[in-house]
Length: 147
Image (tube, rainbow, N blue to C red; front, side):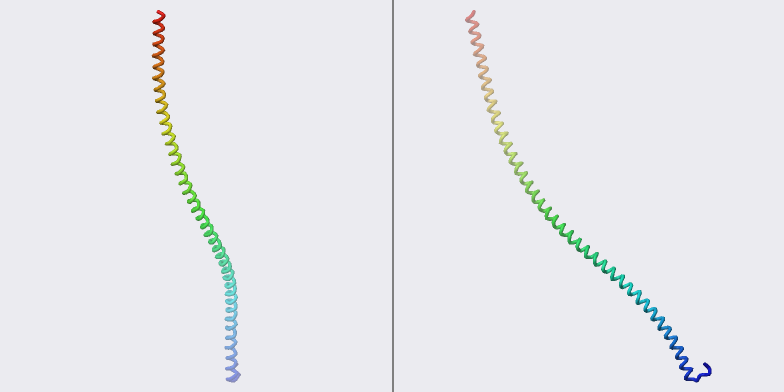
């Protein structure tokens, strides 16, 4: 290198410098390729995760809609059952009142019948007492006639 002229030396130094630069650029290029490959893999992984998440979201939305629909149907059923229960309760109350009225009427009728039968028994008792007295009188008179 000492024997070369100044220009050749400059060219040689430039060549060495350029060679060093090429090595640095190649090293940078390799790092960038590896980084690019890593980013591509990460991108593929993220795309896969996004697809999985999208499917999960769709599934959850579908499940949520089904649950809302089911809740709505169950609420309607509950309302219908509450209405039916209200009707049954009012019918039961009406039937209870009707039975109460019928029972009161039967009791009143029975009470009247009891009072009537008690009066009949009193009359029959009086009649029986009269018949006893009459029988005793007849017996006494017969005994007197026989004597």
